[in-house]
Image 1 (cartoon, each protein chain N blue to C red):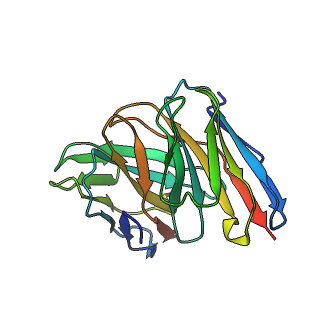
Image 2: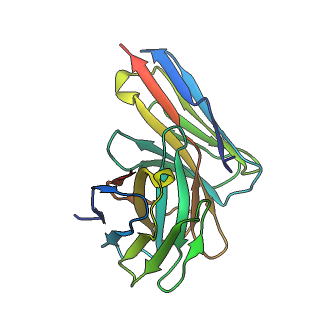
Length: 113
Length: 112
């Protein structure tokens, strides 16, 4: 049971470098999300996608771009990494409706030096 | 500032004590979810409350959704060391999509 798969699990970037975080789900979910988690801040929504072909900004979208490549995949891109983007990033997916449960990947620990 | 204010941020108690965690917002949610997160893992859903005033019980955990669907509480009776972890509330916005916003979390430590 794969669920939500994120890659990579760890990454160190230099300031100004770019990278893409990959996320794939095999639960046929419509909605997908990218969050970042900093100490004491819980999870903050970066971008979300309600369905294939649509994306919307969350609480903290600056410095990030996303692509909903198809129903399974939702990628997060950092065009020019900054130390303030050092965080743990989580991808999640959910079905539709009030009772739907969000399933999370194991996270990507990103350090920008 | 976060859309969902969760309190307290930290809680350190002895085994057997009771505790309550609060989640408050000025926004109305279509539903409110509570998750628990272990170190190095993603959050896992505990419960979803949908109707204003709804109360749900999960063994020693009691969840309540406020009448106006703006706030929620989690009460743990006779806490055990196995309850230690990060508890997160999350509000679900309706309107044809599922936008899920989290509170800052409550880090609970239960000591034997």
